Length: 107
Length: 119
Image 1 (cartoon, each protein chain N blue to C red):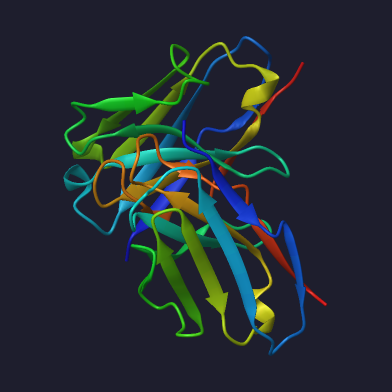
Image 2 (image 1 turned 30 degrees about the horizontal axis):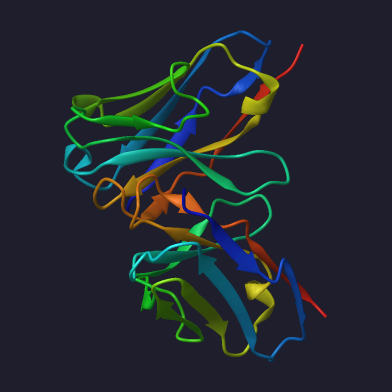
């Protein structure tokens, strides 16, 4: 059974700084990895699919990289609206599985 | 514009049943797989059930298999989740989500509906 592990659980960052979030799969998921952003009281929003393809309307400061078992979501310069919880999800192996999430909070 | 609007949630006693609905608009409903994802209070996201575009194939998480049933009414552009034998562990916000294909990522989400199982 595949396991998706996200780190860190919480990241404290100042506005304007870079944030780097990690997602690790216990076995290869190729590039079938998505990232979502969720703000309190809201539904998740798709940011990235295919490990590195931004969804429609997602700002360029969000970028995804990696393949196989190691993936990274980078937010190049954090804006106030970016403080949220971020989830990765693999869709290479059935069933689809989410990571536990990483919270980006204001430092 | 794609819109997904859930309804049918609320408070239900342990052992009870509830049916959630998700009204879809802004896309050709019958073309796409649809999924239910849930989120327990303060917890992460959990895939629950997926149904193919024509309704011919359904998939359920082990945690709900035998208790929950996903279905769809394509002429009415509506997705359903019939939930039976509910327990406290089923308390969560339930989201319907749009897939490009079965087993894919989720590009559109509803706003979510809260289901609380409590006596």
